[in-house]
Length: 495
Ligand code: NDP
Image 1 (tube, rainbow, N blue to C red):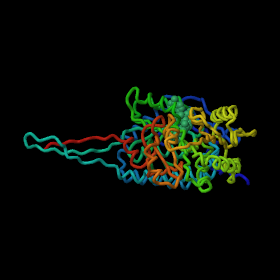
Image 2 (image 1 turned 135 degrees about the vertical axis):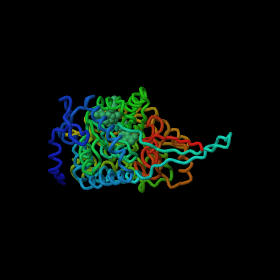
Image 3 (image 1 turned 90 degrees about the vertical axis):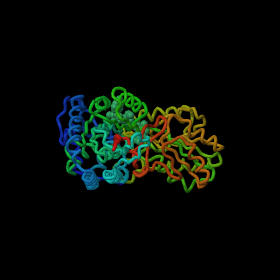
Image 4 (image 1 turned 120 degrees about the horizontal axis):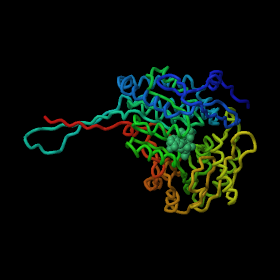
């Protein structure tokens, strides 16, 4: 099949000499250093981005602070909701353009970019828009006894924390960027976003669309660059909250940096080594398509996706044989070709990381299926299934963030729980069974922020999401995000 035609508007956008998007406009950059954005399918340079200096970051934070105290503070919750909905309409209207920008820089399949990343960006934006008018405190009856007949009443209000720093990874930059932007704007905060240096363009385009949507200048700013630019942002005195999504080591460093000096609010959405537990009663033919789709979507570069299959010994051989046969049918190809089922990994450093794990599995003779880097242009690797027996094996313990899945048998519920929880991570998990009674007994014993039954990697804005253990701090979505983006103020009155 042929590749989809890159839109003229996309071509024009990538050919621009991008600066940062600050105070509602493009600004010239302090330094001339630039980062090349590489198309992971072709290894060609797509575009370049600016490297944000401390001065650039301070301009952006200042703009966000002024917007927080003036324009956005004077915008009613109703108007905030209207503007977020308008932005959702514009994202929908420009969906093909945004999807192509994602595909060209991340290697995400075009259909995934359209139907998951951009479509969910719209859904999440509309969800957050609805919250703008529903943020409230409580009234309380004080409990202290009255000495001289005086009475007391008390209430609480929720107020936006102020300027938020949103630091975003490369795997779903537009959608994860919107989780932070939507949370910030609906609660009355303003934001400076630092996208990943590997995939920056879709969030830059979104910042332009926000101005078209009537969101005041300075409410959303985007400063581009690598880790150093993110550090400047976290260090800025006017930043009151850091919302970070990325790896555990970076998250821990950022958490220390953000809380070390002035106790900024933090939410950290970090990595996982998520287990999918296939119980003895599971019908392998029925569950396999859903399980494999959740596992290999976006080449496994999904924080919530399973990387460990734990299979009841009675079903182990059947699962291994059928899964290996199914993944050999997955067509690897250009992400712009609508018939491709797997594209490339998103960037070269990540390819090297995944290759390290494939080499390890090769040395230990653990490969059931796949295991190779394709000898062609682009960062393509085969979807891989590994037999891992030892729960202290690095392939059982370490996040590969690629299409590399370990399969391990278990015999009893207790052994299953021990294996599931034998991890520093605790992001997601799934149970594949029709035995609801057993599932309900196991769920409280699993150390994970999200657990699915007969599904995996399914994020809904109405359901809280976040990790336990080293997988993070804080929750996104539902009403849980409100706590992270607001301060709770108590008011007490004597009368
Ligand atoms: P990184 O931790 O490498 O980077 C995340 C972001 O932080 C990027 O914008 C990066 O910039 C920036 N950054 C890197 N170093 C610093 C620093 N010292 N100070 C401030 N900012 C910094 O993660 P990846 O981008 O590689 O993303 C993959 C990881 O993210 C995986 O572990 C995955 O599990 C996790 N993830 C978690 C999700 C969740 O919701 N729990 C969702 C998606 C991914 P740059 O890229 O320019 O270096």
